[in-house]
Image (cartoon, rainbow, N blue to C red; front, side):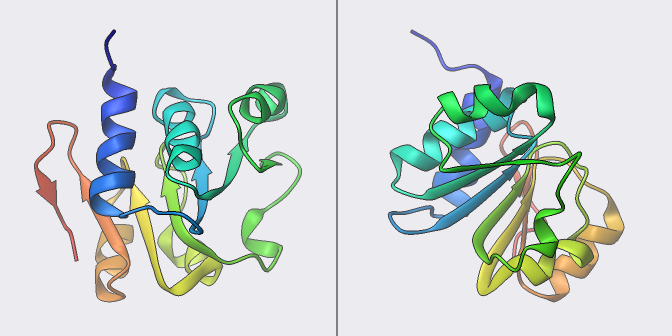
Amino acid sequence: ASLGFGGITALEFLRDVAKIQDGHKLLVYGASGDVGTYAIQLGKYYGADVTGVCSTNNLELIKSLGADRVIDYTREDFTADGEKYDVIFDTVGKLSFSNSKRSLHNSGKFLMAVGGIPDRFFAMLNNKFNVIRAHGKKNFTS
C-alpha cells in the first residue's frame, strides 16, 4: 500500500503542524480535493470534529468520508455562521486569513497548503499561520 501526495501533505499539516487531537474542531476547505479528502479522514482518525467545505456536487462524497458536517460553499459562507474552529485548513488556496480569523479560536491555527504573500504576512503577525512547502521544508511557521 502507498500514500500519495495528498495523504502525506494532509498528514504533515494535521499531525505535525496543527497537532490535531481528540476534541479539536477542524474545518477543511477544499475537502473534495486530493489533500482535502485525506484531511477529512485523518481528522476523524485523530478524534477531531470535522467540517468539510466543498461544492454541491461533492457533498455526499465528503459525508461518506466521515465529515461530521458538510458546508456547500456555493450556498453558505462558513465565516458567517459564528462557529469557531481550532484549525482551519485551506487545501486549495482560496481563503484569506483576514476573512477566516473570526472563525478561529484564540489559540487556533490557520493552515494553507498554498497561499499568497499578503495572507502569510498578516497571519504570521497574529501567530496563527503555518505553511509547508510540498517537499516538506517548513516555511513561514510561527
